[in-house]
Image 1: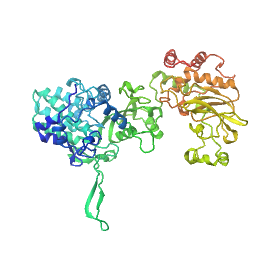
Image 2: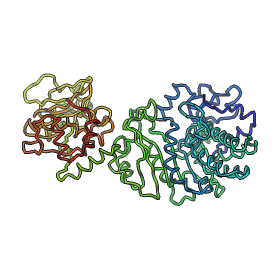
Image 3: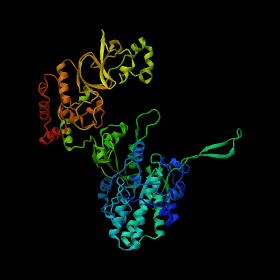
Image 4: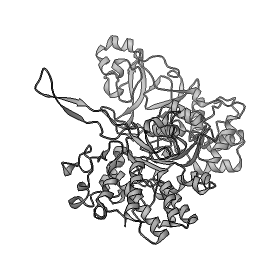
Length: 630
């Protein structure tokens, strides 16, 4: 059962205590709800409304519940809208542990004053683990793994005097920070930190702390665990339109004035002053965190006509490195493979940095966050400004695949198969619009898109089901089925392999699991394309061969376990684009090849293993991880 904290009980003990925990030290008012979860309760519960004691006590006692007690619908809704996943305790222990291993040699005073920040902290599991945020089960004091827990545990072990114990506990709290956007989660986080103080104080002294001590700790918490929009460094809903009391010269209506958003302020306890959070990322900043930790939001909800959510986790990774010496975050892992929607320039920056390393990777995200499907998996990355621990470079999560890659790249004749991969056929728009000017409004990019895109076969009636003289045959997909359509040759622009033999493969396939067969129920297996066959962007093509035998050899290569193992280095989502094939080595598919392409796919695999001098362990890895393909 969850060990929820009753705001009613806090208020009964001391109205001041609850008021302190509701304080926003930036706006000098109360924190706001900043969530739509309660607005059906009407006045006083809108996202921009401030949380007051009367809104969480009396009639509304027990309104705010830990995540584990919320309805399944609300949990899923928050996950969907903010890509908010909830952090299991074992993951907190793992992330905290990576940093802890480097700090445990510090003496007690230095150790407790290491400044930590938990970003987008929710109920603050990285700070204190009173209960498992997923199950709600209470965690015994000795098994708690938050970074503040670890400080309090060490103080408890090494200090016997009660007064000294309390003074060091205050120092530990002053060096422990967190921020959260949503007011209900923030209040829970603050309550958890206060209750944690009571837990350790009682365990150490056998007595409950005095009310004045609780107020002192609550005050520190209200400064250090604060409400903030982490991307914009502002207090949520701090800018509201206000009516001016001055009438306009030309109207009897009150003027509406926009009030600026309040930039978040935090307390530097060493200098005993408030400073702007935004300034921490400046190189000249007087204050930095020693460690930033957390599980940041992964994406923003799609806006307007967009159907795709934009990632934001890379912004948190960047910000963490600017405001701290060390950061350790768990995020989607697609960027490790230069995949996904994070900017390619950003991916390259992180992968080539000597300050980052990957501590943990799990391709199946549901093994980390139950019931969550994050394409490409999740990873814990560790940044250390003072230590050269990279670069990450080409990331693979199997050591065998790493060693195979090195052997392949170091082979004397290594060239990438990307050299012979071609994308879709294209229109000759000048000729098309000359005969069909009305098509300009039906083709993408205001009629400028030459590419044969997925929906085009059903959009233009120039594509015929019947073959006529002097036509190209176009392969595409219509109503979730593979189809061929015919179009007069003059409307298709010249293409590298339009008149050649090639192998066509789906441009999207499977989930990204290593060794998948290259087929899906909707598109099907690779096939050999004959001359005079074009294709839409449902497919990519391999080769511009003069003979059908070369194309058949290419097809066997694509079906080989070896080639698909190499594809698995970068293909970690369904996307099967050209760049995913970067580490698949190009072969000679003619009769002069060092591979006998007349043999079975299994025998071709054996020849490839020998060519690249793979060890028995590397061969066993491929054979056990890559599915056979018919």
